[in-house]
Image 1 (spheres, one colour):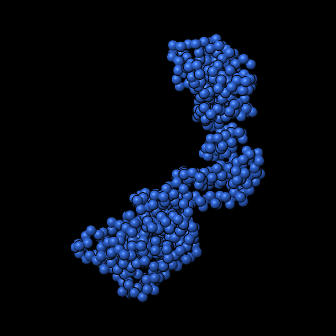
Image 2 (cartoon, rainbow, N blue to C red):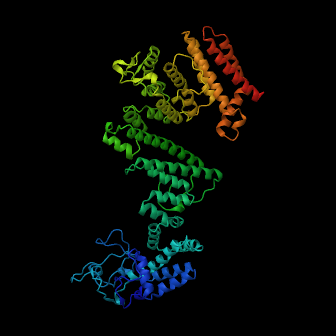
Image 3 (cartoon, rainbow, N blue to C red):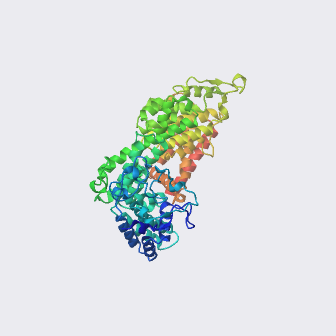
Length: 633
């Protein structure tokens, strides 16, 4: 019960004087513990011996029992730093009747502790902090209060705890002892001591030890005092409260009270959906739920003991909502990146730009106020996909604009190219741009791109592949109108190349686009087959165009067989196995071979076509048919 005895300060040199054993980097608890041990504090000596014996539980008990002799906590005064906490006895460790202005006149708080420094007194005497290094006044025991004793009790405990935590990587037995010591400390009923403990573990970087404490006190400290959503998410995740972890991240991502960068919102939303997915998985395996904290989708008022685990149906519903919101937030992030990459920031109102960067913008506003006016066609299509909006006219207009974007305005050296491009731009956002006929590849329009040079092909190819991967196979394939895209790409290739028929040994660039997007070969074949029928039904009697379509179909079949690795080479490769399975189903049903026979018959009945071209296509079909029959029959 003697504060001076506990602190080891009775009749010793002023504690403000630096000691050889102290370092400038020492924390307040390290300084206080070292001084107490140096000056013979029985508490410090007992704690040292107990820890040497590995009795970490006893070390905690001794320090906390001793601390209990010196009282509780007091409220800070207005002139004290708001972040400071000081644990002391009744009346702040002062005698009955001591006035507030008298506090600090009769003793100096322990140096480096959480106690506020004493300022100059009414008589003009200075604080210990202002004394010169040569002043070494004697501190008598009567100047040591409950404040110093209680701080010393905690300082001794924290000193040895941090030493143990810092040695977990050096000594085999240290992690288990540290875990035990933290567990005993966290079982204390002293809420203010627990706050100090939590702060210590957080400040010293031992977050893993902090988060392993299962306590409503810690939960509320993180949520209400630290207000750290990420730390609370980690706490819930570690304690298998995944649905609460998801709830915390979802609230953070959806917050309208504060400006949160969009990147952080997307990150929070991603963590939320992952947490809810984990909760779904666990709920599916076992519907028995342990008691958990907070009110589901309501609030975290009364700790872990009052709330039930949500049902699987509730988790499914919430997971769907979070996924939808994540899709929109990800789309907003792509919109922001597109605006930045295209140097369009100056074209956006500053208020709208701030909203886009630090809040969640409604998807209708993204389309009508950002992507549409800024001619960001790709983003418009992604918005239609996300909203499952099957607006055929808008989709066709957007795709025409994308396919024209890298080409028009331009000049063409042939009438066929000019006619095709003029038809293509009709109904697009680039309808007013020029397509100039420049038969001599010179003249007044040399500043325009020459279509036949093909410089636009790599850029268009990369763009369609990237966009196609985002659109196709995502539950809204209508946003990737395959018939329109195949017809346009093949038309661009046909009028850009020479007038001779192309029967190449290499895959054409339109075909490469479709394959890299991930479109199944049967679907690609159907798209190219439809071009043959369109040519036949058009009434134009363009044999060369019809033969080119037949050559394209032959190319699709050949690529399909090669991609399947002749069936046997694809084993072990999931992509090849899928292609092989597609080919096997098409052949086993009898439909594919019958289709090849139909193509051969059409070629045999072709009138007016180039005989060499017809023979080349026929040879390619026969080769593909023979390969199929060799491996299936």
